[in-house]
Image (cartoon, rainbow, N blue to C red; front, side, top):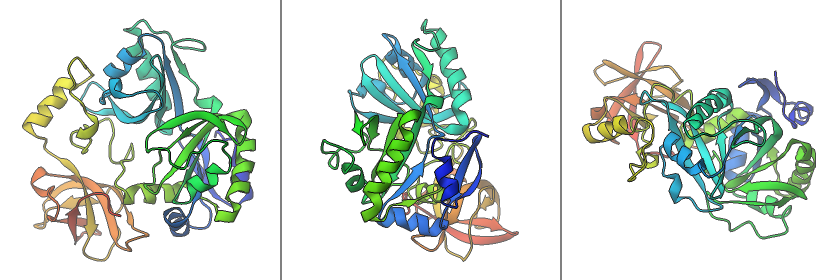
Amino acid sequence: MKTTVFTKYHIAAGAKMAEFAGYNMPIEFTGINDEHLTVRERAGVFDVSHMGEIWVKGPKALALLQRITTNDVSKLVDGKVQYTCMPNGRCGIVDDLLVYRIDAETYLLVVNAANIEKDWNHICAEGKAFGMEAGHGKELYNASDEICQLAVQGPLAMKIVQKMCAEPVEEMEYYTFRKMPVAGCDAILSITGYTGSGGCEIYVANEDGEKLWKALWEAGEEFGLKNIGLGARDTLRLEKGFCLYGNDIDDTTSPIEAGLGWITKFAEGKDFIDRACMERQKAEGVTRKLVGFKLLDRGIPRHGYELAAPSGERMGVVTSGTMSPCLHIGVGMGYVRPEFAKPGTEIAVVIREKLLRAEVVRLPFV
């Protein structure tokens, strides 16, 4: 199992550790509910060093990205970040990811930990058609094992991070980034995140990880900064209706089915993989749609539970589900037939062969 620069600190803090995407990662520290509410109300830090970082450079960089992603990368300017996904040639999704534009010929892709190898192989295969080479010093470079990353999230997060920065960062816009010193380390400071509670992600070289970690905790002490594990990361993103690859989206789901039409841009001259298929789905409709729902009866929806019409007819599965720490009710996401996708529609979650009533709602939940 791989470790991150910060693994020893998690173990010292008494974290419950488990394997995730090949890494020994902290699942929880003080408990998922406590950690969840800490991020909603104050600030918490996540070790997300397991995420992948892939560089795409050179005069063909934009053309390649326009081919392999659904969003319109040409709309990016220096310092902007874009959420997008990579189609797989079968109208499914290789991965969802972030694209950072450093300059017109330099882009950083941040991909899901479990998909690093798959994504890298896909990007390299497509890059060959553009004459792009892979490897150190080449146009395509997988830097995942060289970079560590901390996500500082919550309403007080940027007050903490500001203490480590010489220039003002608290008013940076959502989905922008800067290459700048943080705690004296060369860093990318990105106003992104997976919690919906504000904050940033900080990327530094592995050799600067310990310096960043110590400075962050010193800066965060007065604000009650806490360690947060992957368990609360999951409940936080679900309350905000953010998709998780492997649950809500995967190689068999299209972005149109998953409600990601907003990152699927049919721009003139953008001949991305699966464009024709997705245009057809948008025009003709799909046979299933990803929705958010809340339980009306008492219970907790879990990944893999069946979804049914009120009559009991099975029509889908729960892709993500939990007891919302903020709402104190069961909430989830899953695929249903289009006629059941409208907010306010009643559906059912099958739990131990019982039909528990649920209502389709607009996302986010909170």
